[in-house]
Length: 121
Image 1 (cartoon, rainbow, N blue to C red):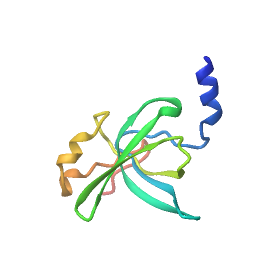
Image 2 (spheres, helix red, strand yellow):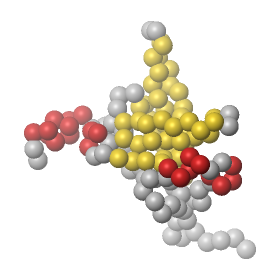
Image 3 (cartoon, helix red, strand yellow):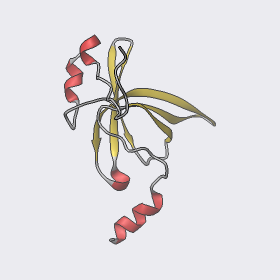
Image 4 (cartoon, rainbow, N blue to C red):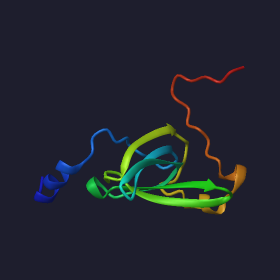
């Protein structure tokens, strides 16, 4: 392990989930307004994960009032209070940029089934 990796290892946040493209994620972001601090929720689909270590980032996309909004977060950044993965979707791409051109039902991702799950009759 090199010097840079040792310095970065001290700053990595514990308890961050392993994110993959297609996951639906709820991120609580710390917002500081004047002398007050609050947490703002950003819920969207992961369309991009890049980097490693301290430089790992992920991009979320959501539709807000009919307009697509994308936001890139550093995984180990101090502005992120909490990350919850609400759903894993089945995707066959590493980058889901094609969702930018889709709207409505065409932009939906199918939920990934777990091993023991069966279909109801």
